[in-house]
Length: 220
Image (cartoon, rainbow, N blue to C red; front, top):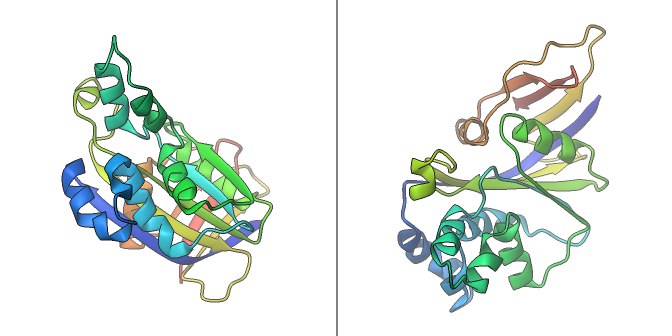
């Protein structure tokens, strides 16, 4: 059985908040002028991630199905004179890179993950298999505009970051991956938005993974 203890949790539930409103709300959380080129998701992930103070001995796992949707929309709208700045901020790991580069902060290992039905399962399993005593799991989405109308974007904006440790000290929940003698029949995956709601409301869950194992989160 693999097990980690959840010791800290920070959430940003922006729902349908527009990027300009997010920037105004979180401006004081960053150095002067830093927010001008940050994406909405970068601002939110940074707000959730910064209190955990990621360091060079930590593994960082980032999960997002659509990532920088607004930047990608703007980049595509900029053709034929494609914007290199918008391209840079539209790449999948951008939300975390904006924070780490701004802090000039190395980490031990960085796993940016994307996907759909199995994204949460993949992210949690990656965290459980991480090579360091502390793992920071973060993620989120930003609500799209025309990409949402085409079914390729999130319909809400949110971000989360949690610290997972091999030590039970200060634990508020535990995350386990276990094998039963009889493999579990894989069920439907948990969406990233559903996972965020489980964290926000501190709801337990148990998933039968694609490999037939049991992935569980239990609150103390």
